[in-house]
Image (cartoon, rainbow, N blue to C red):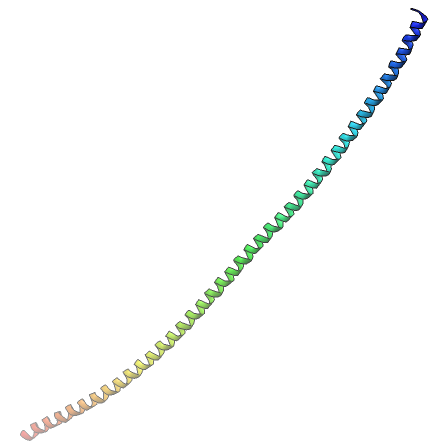
Length: 151
């Protein structure tokens, strides 16, 4: 091989070396860009996931608040119904108590009337019995008088 061929091979090798270096640098830059893009995508995914988690937390809190409010409303409704039932039962009790008191007063009045009627009847019977007894006594006295006169 001659010197010129050797120089030519050296020049070609130097050119190839430069091309390889440029290609390596370009590949390195592309690799760094891909890595940066991947990092950026990972950060975006992380931010998206955090936002989604925050949304889910807010939704869970809101749902919990709604459920709690609904439960409290039902509890309040049941308390109101219980109070209404209690008041209604108390009203019915008071009404029945009043009616029972009236009926007791009526029964006492009727008993007093019957006692009075019985007392009047007894007095009438006493008077009638006394009259009959007096009549019988008179007849007996007359009959005895007739027997005495007839003797």
